[in-house]
Length: 261
Ligand SMILES: NC(=O)c1ccc[n+]([C@@H]2O[C@H](COP(=O)([O-])OP(=O)(O)OC[C@H]3O[C@@H](n4cnc5c(N)ncnc54)[C@H](OP(=O)(O)O)[C@@H]3O)[C@@H](O)[C@H]2O)c1
Image 1 (cartoon, rainbow, N blue to C red):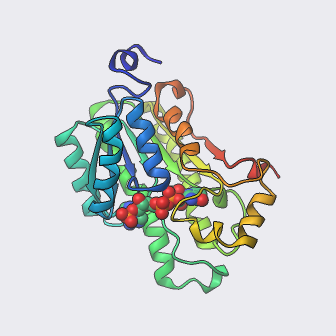
Image 2 (image 1 turned 180 degrees about the vertical axis):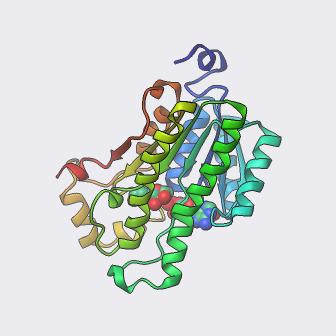
C-alpha cells in the first residue's frame, strides 16, 4: 500500500472512483468494496431511485463515501455531464469501472434484430469507449495516472452460444483493453478487464433459474457452482489500487475455473 493510501485510510484512500451500473449486482458490490477501502465512489446507472437506495445502504456502513448520479451510458451527452459533475463535486476521476451492461437477446445469433444489436453495442461497448475517452482526456491534460477496469465476461473469451451478440461486445472490450493499455501506458494510465463467469444478479436470474442452463455452466466450472457479486469485487479493488501498479492490458477471469475446462 502506498504511504498516501495508508495515511488516507484503506487501500483506495484518497481516490475518486466511478462505477457504472453501480445500482445493483456486481457494480454495487464493487462500489461497496471501494467505499470500504476508503475511496469516494460515484455510482451511475439510468434510474436515480435504485442508485439512491444503494448509496444509502453503503453509506450506512461507510458514511459519505458513495454518491449516486443518474447517467444512461448509451448517451454521450449524459456521459460528459456526469464527468463534469464529478469533477465539480469531488475532483478528477482516478478509477473508472465500465461495468454497466445489457443483453436484450437470448437465442441463435443470427436471430438478433437490428434494435437488439444496436442496444447491446451502444451500452456494452460504445458507452465504455466514450466514458474511457472522457476520463482519459482529462487525466492526460492534468498529467495524472489512472486505472480503467472493463467488466467483460467469459462469454467474450470464447464461443457464446445463444448470447452471441453480447459475446461479441465483451470480446471487443478485451481488444479495447489491450490496445488502450499500450497506447496509455506511457501516461501511466493502466487498463485491465475482469471476466466474470456466472454470477447471481438480476442480469443472470433467468440463466440461474433455468436448470439445464445452470447445469451447463456449473458442470464445467471447477468449483461446481455459480459466483456471488462480492467475489468479483476483490479483483476490482486490486486493479484500482496502487498494488497493481505494474499490471496493465490483462483480463482476469473470475469464474470458478470455467475457462480452464
Ligand atoms: N451476472 C453475470 O453472470 C455476469 C457475467 C459476466 C459478466 N457480467 C457483466 O457484469 C456487468 C454487471 O452485470 P450484473 O450481472 O451486475 O447485472 P445487473 O445486476 O442487472 O446490473 C446491471 C447494472 O447496469 C445498469 N445499466 C443497465 N443499462 C444501463 C445503461 N444504459 N446506462 C447505465 N447503466 C445501465 C443497471 O442499472 P439501471 O437499470 O438503473 O440502468 C444496473 O446497475 C455487466 O457488464 C455484465 O455484462 C455479468
